[in-house]
Amino acid sequence: MFKKLVQLVVMLSLSVTASAVFAKTIKIATLSPDGTLWMNEMRAGAEEIEKRTQGRVAFKFYPGGVMGSDENVLRKMRIGQLQGGAVTTGSLGDIYPDIDIYSLPYLFSSFDQVDFVRKKMDKQLMDELEKKGMVSFGFGEGGFSYMMSDSSLYTVEDVRKQKVWVPGGNKVGEAVFSSAEVSPVTLPISDVLTGLQTGLVNTVITSPIGAIALQWHTRVKYVIDVPLTYITAMMVIDKKIFDGLKKEDQAVVREVMGAAFKRIDAANRRDNQGAQEALKQQGIEYIALPKESLDAWYAIGDKAIKKLQKDGSYSAAIYKTITDYVTAAKAKH
Image (cartoon, rainbow, N blue to C red; front, side, top):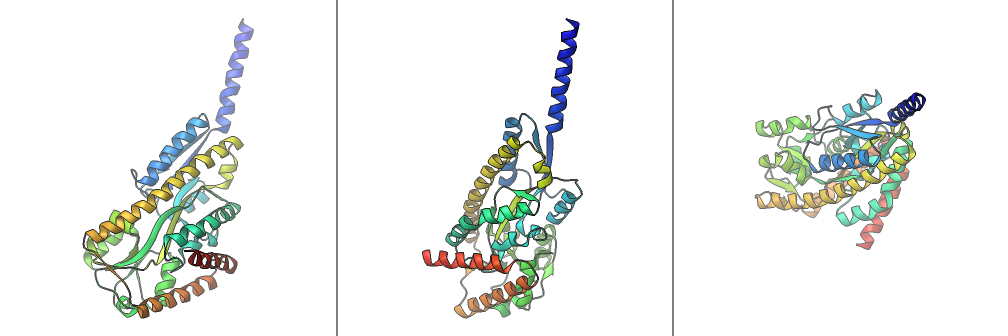
């Protein structure tokens, strides 16, 4: 009897030890505040994953920017303080430049074009990102960004007279406005509302849902009704950490988080369209540019794209691929 009891204790000890070996808590940081769609979906996914892996894979989230900017999150991933982050694709450019190809200026003019191109390219871009060491689970649409201001901006010259905000390190924004001979004001996102209130800046570039969420819409009166860039973000996990999970657990994480990001992607589309209508209902005027102004901005966009290519912000091959798909999308729609 005593011998059987000892054997049982040993077996239980080995079982606990084996579980401990495979148990993994993945720490994820993001700028998204708690209670938002992103956080709700990621938390729900994490709960399902923990249940289906019998606790071998758990997630701990750090929302609301408590770990700093996207760049800080990626730095903390490199030193092992974090294992992942939900970040904008632009912040991943140093790891895989082509991952932010969707954000080239004036690339898309409609969601029909976006949907056509993304069906062709999402998987290719995610696979290449994984080869560079980051596992992702899908693009989360941030919507189109627009130029918004307290002044009507019908021409490029009108914009040159404004105090335009561009986030620090935003290569696309910097390329566009340097090509337009505009000297932008660089501020952290957290300081932009104060900047609008004090007059430090009076023109911003953001999506409709971003303008409302950040309360910037209370300080603008006009929106240039031309999509400037297409915004995307994604959750990434260090591939070395992900590869350390059991194969069956990797499959569960991919399945559950992949489904979560499909829901995030679709919901963000609906929310941005609703936010655009809300801005109009609040009296914010959408400005349709005259053809000569539109042509001038498109020429500036082309100049910015050439600068970005020269700087190595994307490859010539991926640019040809995406522009071919955009051309095909325009022909189809």
